[in-house]
Length: 84
Image 1 (cartoon, rainbow, N blue to C red):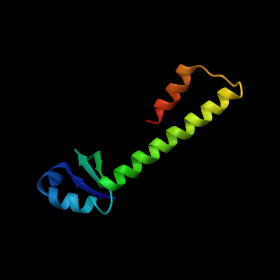
Image 2 (cartoon, rainbow, N blue to C red):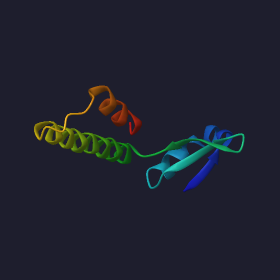
Image 3 (tube, rainbow, N blue to C red):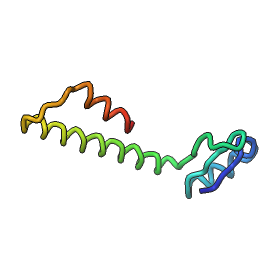
C-alpha cells in the first residue's frame, strides 16, 4: 500500500487522488497511520460486503430463532455491532 504523510497528502492532493483510484493509500500523521483513502468503487464494494455480512448473520439468527434456539436480543445486537 502506498503511503503519504499528512503534509504530502495536502500538497500533492491531485496525485493522491490519482493513486487512490488504483490502490488504497495510507496517510500518516506523526509517523502513525491515520486514514486510508480508497476509490469510490472500492468503497462501494466494502459497503456491499458489510451489508452482505450483516444479512448473513441476520438470516442465521432468524434460523436459530425459528429452530427454538432463542438468544437474548441485546446480546445478538452487541455481537453485530462489534463488526460494524
